[in-house]
Image (cartoon, rainbow, N blue to C red; front, side):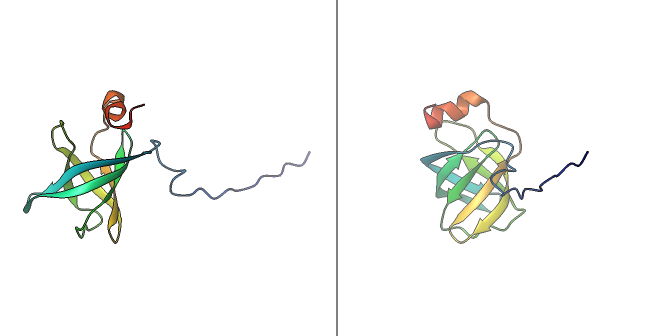
Length: 104
């Protein structure tokens, strides 16, 4: 018997543990060296988010995300490309928090 296998390349999106939902939420982002700067969260999941900002964020840096009505949430900058960046949360949001901002 002969078996054929195909390797499929996964995109970065396919490897995400959590599915991100498109949003447009004004928020703040800070590190210990400066006060919160305004950003826009453009996609959100229980495990992370994508943002747009005027900040220059270094991959691997520690930051705190401040969404409206929530405490500051510790994050790691996982990628940065011009005005866009991706953040991974140190601990996941409860699904109810995600529903609050996504309406779902």
